[in-house]
Image 1 (cartoon, one colour):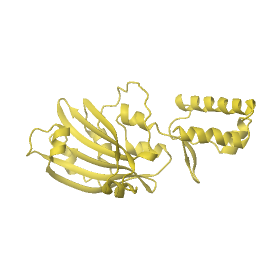
Image 2 (cartoon, rainbow, N blue to C red):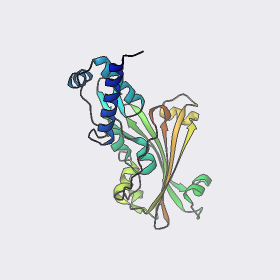
Image 3 (tube, rainbow, N blue to C red):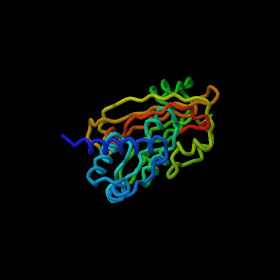
Image 4 (tube, rainbow, N blue to C red):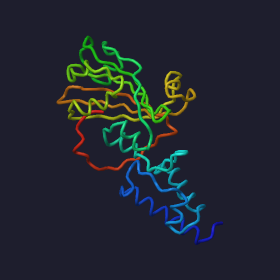
Length: 246
């Protein structure tokens, strides 16, 4: 059993660092000082500091990157559940390089499942279908499968999206008035596992979002994340300034 003093120091630092993160004195993407420097600054052993950082990492507040350091994690579930955010910004906040790889682009009729989820009434109306991967460093971060309504966003037809992710472009160019999210756990199919470099059947987090503008659908997107590297955390605060689809 640990001595009372050691437990007290450990709990005190946990509470203190948790407060720094929640108050955003340490904002998402903030790089912490080295473990030895933190231990010295707070008057504890390196072992105690390591245990504190390890627990905060396990709880999802920190991300530790080999050779890079320790960073405050992006509150991903807040992004997924409560807000429409930019995946590029989310990745960069973790201290990692982001890139988008467009895998397919086609102007075609919507398939049955897309018509149902996007609530498309005209089966003959074309949609712009896009499929691509977001990367965080060298690893796939998210598979994105999206359709865009050319009537609501005609300028999308002139974009090739080979470098700029469609969600980022939509956020800047097309307003929206309402959005719906559906989040569920899925097991990776062989195709999804191959794209995300996971074993088939691995747990994944799937986010489906539909946005509309004054009753007209703008985009329907399905984003699939490796489950072991993502978690749900939400802070229930209104964000009135966000008004564009991702």
